[in-house]
Image (cartoon, rainbow, N blue to C red; front, side, top):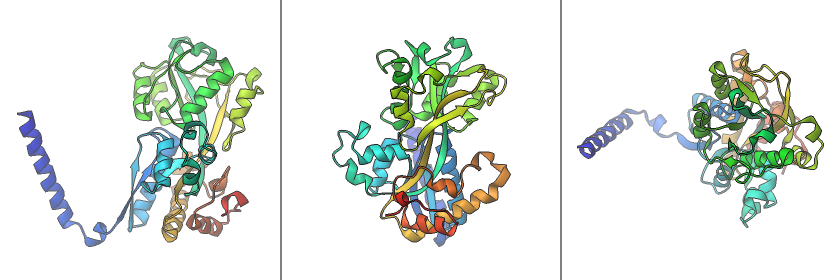
Length: 343
């Protein structure tokens, strides 16, 4: 009976879809459909890139961008380099690793050549790494993570690698040995932490993060940071000095009264960006870049989290060539283009 019902639903759904397509105007049918891959909801990349897609879909009738918010940035950037996806989020650090065949790309002989096929559209500040726990857990420092269930980031991704290295640099803790590195995607991890199934949840995002804000409304939370006596250590400095990285501050009280930190926490900050393939149409990328920044400017005070996303920030920490279309758009917007962003 269940199978019959499902089949009927499928037939009805197909008929409805066919009818809808039949009445669409011909111009709508001619839209170029493209996929843009990013991190899960609640992260800065998801917010910025969903806004990018919404602006393009509204202002440029010839294009439609569909946002894919599943999977890790490592896989996304390979798909763009291979021409399977139009746009994705990447970072200066990930670009450096891919170009030099290191870390998650160490066993991928084609990684350096694929990296050469990537072109930047724009960069933007992703925010700071949040290392969150519930006050009731008794965890007050990274050293207390031993034996706990921890989400570092999706396995194989840059966030996972960064947090695993930070925990080792600060407390000598090894993922999978000293604590359980839970393997989940961004969406599932946020839900799992909210349900109390994770002891520690890591997320690189601007503060206040929508996901953590929602949790802090009804729960006392604490954020872990890098102790002052570890800031100059070799391991921490190796992370801080990577392309696109630096030290950042997570302010006390940014999540309201239920945030139990009494002082600001020092953590890592990171820059990320939107990239496309070298073969992407120049006129298209030009139009999209101009439309996006015009749309962001119009949003003004209605979206304060977008204030840091501006044309000048589009070339911050950049270490790959800009796509010719983006280069032309940013030059017209008065941006001073660094040599690293030129071919």
